[in-house]
Each structure stands twice: as structure tokens, then as C-alpha cells.
Image 1: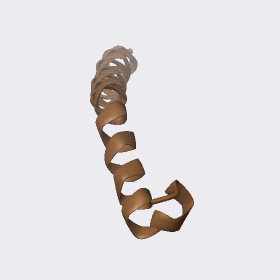
Image 2: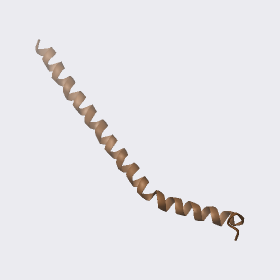
Image 3: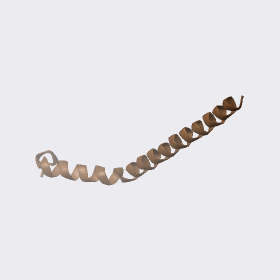
Length: 61
């Protein structure tokens, strides 16, 4: 009976650790996506400048 109680408690501790790890990774992913979304306008502007420089004939220059 004691072994069953110990295994039961260890199982909950293990599940708590797994859930906590999953939440931490999820929060890190959200932070990375937020940073990407914040820098998206700058990246789009740089990409447009590069496109126009490489293909000036498209811009009518």
C-alpha cells in the first residue's frame, strides 16, 4: 500500500513538472512570435527595398 501511495504521489509530481515545462516552452514561443510580429514591418520594408534595387525595371526607374 505504501508503494502505491509513493507511486501515486510521484506520478503527480512528474505530471506537474511536464505541464510546467510545456507552459514554459509555450510562453517562450509566444514571446518569439511577438518579437517577429513587431519586427515584421521593418523586415517588409527591407525586403521591398531589396526587390526594387534588384529589379529596378519593375519600378519604372
